[in-house]
Length: 291
Image (cartoon, helix red, strand yellow):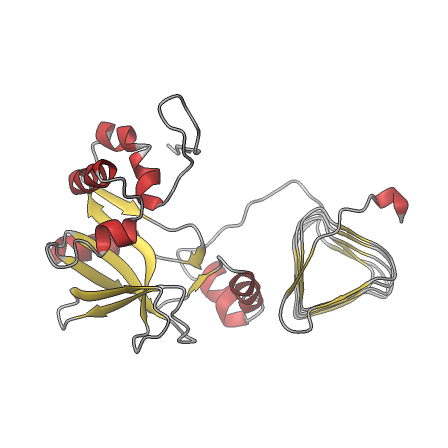
């Protein structure tokens, strides 16, 4: 089954989740009632495919206490990540959390494998000392006295926790090799299906190198863009290098370039939004009857 543990304030606890370790601590009863020997902790702010069974097999083979899934960062900008250094056996000997400068390019993806009982022990220790973060309060503190190993993946992995990261990852899906990897190579990724009509391209619509989801109606020009479900593109609109999220109405003669348009927005006719020095996030909540 799938259990969702939302943060909540109770008479015994007056805090939201203050970190990954604290989130686990506030739901530690679930771990104690479980019978599985191992726990996989996976971050939710990345796009990737990974067979966790292979990570678990590696974890058991190395007799590791903790295994961290790692990857080489393509652009080398490691200041937002944990930078890992390993020995020849794959054991982590150094872990720098979000360094300003680093010679390393191997980063933690935020995916961990750990024995359930050990996790409970480490989390309870954090609770006693009012510590909340799994990296600084468990990984870094136990780097020398626990066997922490790196499982390196060379497949596609991108972080989407920033605007630029989210934008660039969506743009990656316009590349045939990326779409082929996720949607045609096993195991396949299946998107959520809703009961909507297929995308409709009216006479005069021009669409190039774009992903257009179901429920959308296109009257204008769309180039190098990703359109989510139920997007309406009005007459003479031009959309370039942009991401249009769910249920957006674009009035006639709108020009959008290098932007992310928020869900359920209504963009007035004859307006222009361009990301000049980077990606621009467009948030408009105009009433549609005012167009």
